Length: 110
Image (cartoon, rainbow, N blue to C red; front, side, top):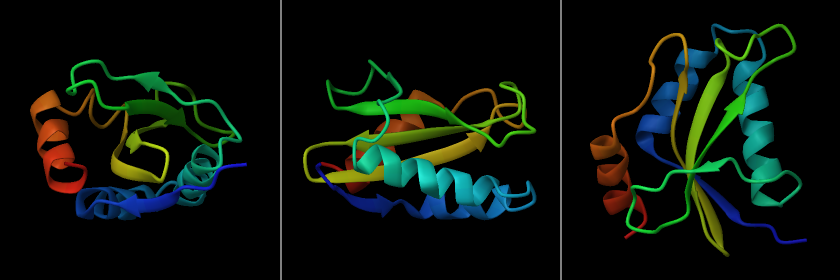
């Protein structure tokens, strides 16, 4: 089993603090990142507009959250590391602009 190093951007760390108002969601996001890093669960949907890099988004929620309310995690993954780029609630923000994700990739990946 492969275990990648998990890194988090400063924006991700700010985002995760906002999720604490939703009981258990911040812990669930961390658990999902650990599972993604060790390949215990399949990757989310690939985001195709990011220079051919392995950038994905995946849903994460608690038992009492609907698909509309759950969090979306955007992350980069390669053979040695997983970088959590952003996390947001779908009902708070429809999506993160590609331009912002590209800037994070340039700062943390390239």
